[in-house]
Image 1 (cartoon, rainbow, N blue to C red):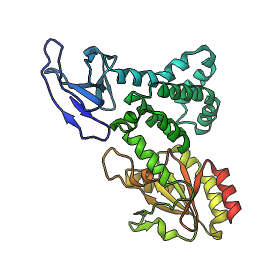
Image 2 (tube, rainbow, N blue to C red):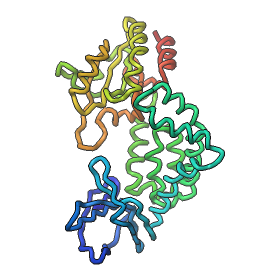
Image 3 (cartoon, rainbow, N blue to C red):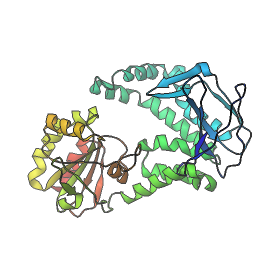
Image 4 (tube, one colour):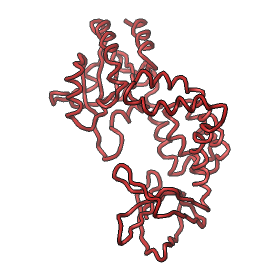
Length: 343
């Protein structure tokens, strides 16, 4: 068994299973995410997970339901009884599936299923369907926010904000977080949300853009502050991001139009493999400056994209000649409007 309190050190323990049963005992300072790894003598280990709290909890699963995916073996079809935190988490996370089955959302559900096969094959069709299914996404979002507010005293209610915050403004995130009970706000489960709010506060429009230095394609270092005196667009992208690379022809037009007027683009790739980044640069022939982000910790987000709380790829953040953030452009049309107003 391993448990991690969302920002707290990982702890572990082990017991022998007898006749398909096992028991762990102890007390927790706060609810934690627990992973139980079942290690039979005659088969490879498989894991199941749930949220533990200080109450009698019963977990039931069948070995026949073991699933192997991406090199990881898990036990599917588990049921958990006795954990209010697990119950609330499942209830909020399950909203999407429930709404998808509603008769009034049949048309959107069918479109959503089509999207799965288009994401990596037809970007334009994918985003068209994404716009069409927005009413479904909004219905899910509103119901989840409603349930978070209803369960404001349960620690796990905050976990779903982690999956929702990319589509929330700072003001929305702060408003929902403020509704939660103080014990939830200060719990280990809320650590990432507290950190996200703090980061977003630091990169609000009008704030000094956090400086950084990263490696360029030729192996030298380039700092954001080296470009002070120009309007600088931070373009967070990656070689594997199809929408990012599909946007480059239009970006080249914008760059050609404004580059001699005090405008520069600094591409910050989220690639973890340098060779993939260099191959993409060679294929796309991008005329602006490029650096590659750093991954100081394995399996953690890259350093600079985290520093700027970039919610998705691509993300476009415009910085003024004074080094202060102008804002995150919602699309290239808004970016052009901002540049036309200033250059």
